Length: 310
Image (cartoon, rainbow, N blue to C red):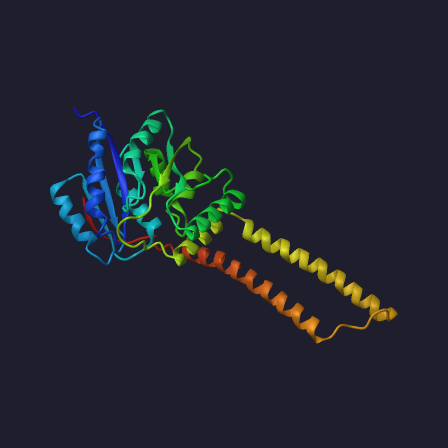
């Protein structure tokens, strides 16, 4: 009777043709590092336009531990991870990217934390081998997340994580769209531990993590986990109303007693332009919330599975 526990690893794939031949051996080598575990690898092709899917199918012919899930189009990395979690059957499940910026060998330490009772083990970035612009954006994002969204969120953030089967079941039931899976994992509140590491520079291929996708993740994170944007609008509205009221009293007082002439068109135009700009920003923030409410109410799935090679 086989009493070994099963360790599943979910790997979202998007234009990783150059990485797959190097990623697969590193993942398979984990079997020698963790001989007491059975392993399965769930690759989710998120609408790649290169030969990633073909390479994965070819690799599966030689290794039955590999599962390949093909989505009908590109739904985004978070949706790809959601799809992978649905098909993961392990006692614990790891999530890692395919570009080898995160070392798969770190799963050995993460398994140790999980065996000690931690249901969420996060590999947090102590340092990044990235450009200055990327570091500034990432550090600013996680600083704002800690300050306005999720208290005590890991300083360097994480997307390299290992979770217990119970956490996976909770995530599969939530099925929330336009969200950040990593933030959702942290928000669930299960016993957690962290392991620090240095995120390496990408060696092969071009990153598809574009600026527009980063902005979407930023907006999704704050709309999903923070009321700060709405509270900010209320505060600005209240302050603007108070200032306008005080200024109105000042104008009326001076008009009655003739202490100062009324201001000309320049001041009026400046005030109108400023207030209209504030209103437009507020309408944009409200629109982001309304769009997500509409998107959830239509009950469309977060992803569509085209093929499963299981």
